[in-house]
Image (cartoon, rainbow, N blue to C red; front, side, top):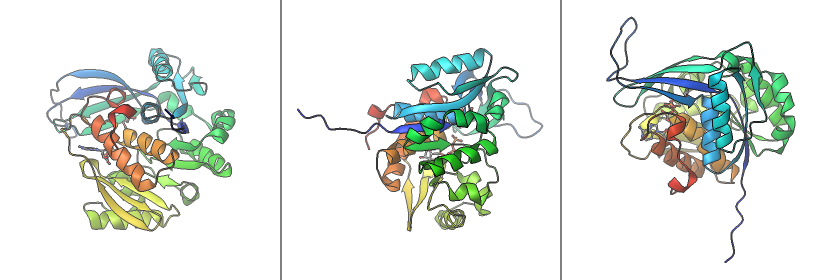
Length: 307
Ligand code: ATP
Ligand code: RIB
């Protein structure tokens, strides 16, 4: 039997590594309030790490560029990435700062609130990116988020652009971005809040999603995907606009849904699929993740996805 050749895409993920401290509760507290929660979990997380693991489990050859502290959390994270067959050659250590930590509350609908103590993530520098230049040159796609210094994201984007690489940016957490960065980005993946921050348009329905996508695209990006939680994603691929609904599932915990979506979309695009096909694949992967607890523990493997 002839075995078809499948190109295993090379993806470089540049981003954060955190340890997540998670408490489940019936509802999220309001400012000034203390409430009693339920179970406590300590899970590996960080948007960068979650996206790197998602890309690896879904079929890519992944190099993760990140920074940890010289502590137990950082060393544990490193072991996890190795066990996921991620190239950890460019995970640097800052001996003066602790590894990143995220405090996460999850309500009974699976919605979350997150505060990140960035620690060593904030020391990932343009000089670190330079050390991984050859990997960036070899890659199909560079995937980034905003839990590391913006200066580093801008530097890596400019380098990837110079090498003619596909740059995918998940602009989370929301931050103001300059147009120079956006013009060198091929695909941007904001959620509802980040889309509002970038466009000034509150996304409440299809019409406002369409307007927000147009406003973001006007900043110089051809391909925009606004993720809309359980509703799915609104996509602009060149001059096509389309809403792609999410799968209906029993939601347990949405932490990291956006990360699985970003990792999956990067794999699918790097395999040569269109943006619309890649969003269908990403919706399917993220829908599996929300039915499970935690960030990395919830990430599906390629064999679980039927798209
Ligand atoms: P998070 O911060 O919780 O990781 P996010 O805010 O970055 O997520 P969302 O827009 O909430 O991103 O979700 C990303 C994608 O995950 C959605 O576009 C959708 O495909 C999937 N998703 C999220 N929530 C659900 C849900 N309840 N049911 C099915 N799919 C979901
Ligand atoms: O997107 C989810 C992630 O955001 C968590 O794993 C947490 O570490 C924060 O970075």
